[in-house]
Amino acid sequence: MGDDRRTFIDALTIDAPIFLFLVANSNLLSFSNQSNKFWRFKRMEDIMDSDNDNVAQRKLYKADENPPLPLTFLFGLQQVMVSVSVLVSIPFLISDEVCPGKDRDQLRVRLIAGTFVVCGLGTILQTALGLRLALLQGVAFAYIPSVRAYMNLEGNRCTATINDYVPPEVYENKLAIVQGTLVVVSILKVFVGATGFIGKMTKYIGPMTVSSLLILLMLESVTITVKRMEQHWISLIMAVALFATVLYLPRVQVPCPAYVDGKCKFVGFNVFGQFPYLTAILFSWFLCWLMTVFELIPKDSVARTDKNTTMLAIQNAPWVRVPLPGQFGMPKFNAGLFLAFIISGLTTMFEAVGNYHAVARISEERPPPSHAINRGIIAEGLGCLIAALIGPCVGITTHAENVGVIGITRVASRVTMIFGGLTMIAFGLFTKLGAVLSAIPDPLVGVVLATSMAMVGGVAIANVQAVNLRITRNIAILGFSLMMGMVIPEYYKRNPGTVKTGVMTLDQMIEVLMSLPMFVGSFTAFVLDNTVGGATRQQRGLRERGVVWELAADGRDIYAFPGPLQRAVEAIPLLKHMPFIPRHKKDFGNIKTG
Image (cartoon, rainbow, N blue to C red; front, side):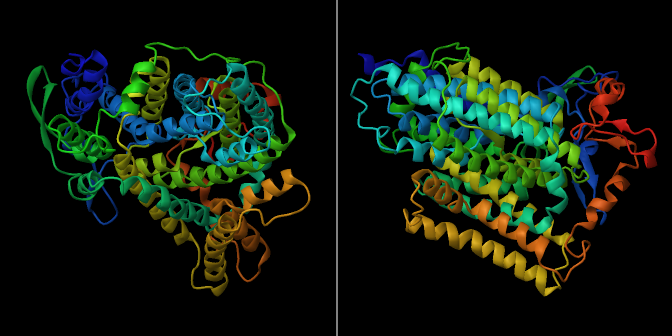
């Protein structure tokens, strides 16, 4: 009889795509209040803009601009849905590495809750006080190889199965070691940003270094993208839907009900242009639900919305859970893991700086000054510290795929990302919601990743336009860096254990470092660009830093603190000289804060 009845959780899981689809395409919450632009529904002509060639394009919501509140919420939700699979996958990997036996699902729920809360707090901190651009903070995959290498050491290897009992103190002790080591690395990361070291280094990081990192990041995602998409043909349907919404339908106005000027009527709204990811995900998820209900796909298909693992994760998730520090015991320290985490932290900082420049270009803002980059690294370090204390057990960093979403949707508003951070916190506290979102089929996640990485690659290519590619030196450096970023990691993947210094920890560090394409390629470009002669700074693409303040002619300083906080900081002489504090330029007099 149980097979003929659906529980509430079953209904919630299967019907979630329908509910979200209706919410995403409803404008009943739109208001017209002439005295409050934050709530006012904007007509199509208000959200169109033109480029230099007088070609109409969608308006770019800049960092200090606020879309209408209902749209702000949906923009934030869209960013979360793009990254939710990555946010959930890390707790799955960590829970497998620490070998909890029968407690695996229970541990996953605890880690998922902590991950959402930490990433939400990190996103708000980074967007509001860090770099001050719309940046979503998510768990960093760069720490996983370090954790995996430590767990594969003698005495840490997993020998238990999902059916075996493992005492909680055994796997919680492993987590406590990872947490304690990450605490130390996080403090060092904050120190690097607070001393201004990373900001000074950015003066030598040119477009070729950043572009090499971003291009290799895109190429590195090919394997995992294909692995997810090849699981089911529904990925092709979503790919067509997503590319259609992004490229062919962004200006199509869909009649939507709205309350405008005291009347209920249908108003044309470009749903596809503003919510391409949300629309494509929900449409494809809805198709998966239909195929599940009408039994059009096998019971073991990855495209089903009622998979056993999905249902089990939702059923085991409590309705409300507040992740607290120390839930795995007192943090401990391991020197070998610390050295490996140092490499992971350096890699994420390199990647973060590249993403900072990418999001600035996409947002049509000036390149981030050194004080903003210092502050961004401090914010990431604090986010990693929170992550170490609460639960994901790996650091957080800026997600490049969410930078790509900004480029496609043309929504770079800080407020939307803050809403996204609040949404993640809600998913972490109300863990049933987070578990439902984790049910998005893997093939759909692969398409989202492919499209986002395509945008990142496009930004990387656009970033090179500041470089004089007529000079053989620049072409050689760029090509050589990309080739080294692919060849060296591939060699170490094919030949593990080739490094033999006599110190196992050092061997693991070198292999982890040399297996990361983004680090190898960007580091090669950085060294060559700063040591090989034959080009001026302008020809290397560094002249852009000299015209930074020309973009602030309208009185905006997007990287400064909010007005009251900026004035309070300037009133304290000691703080004014800190390398992470924004300062006004004398040449431009009183500059408004963003």
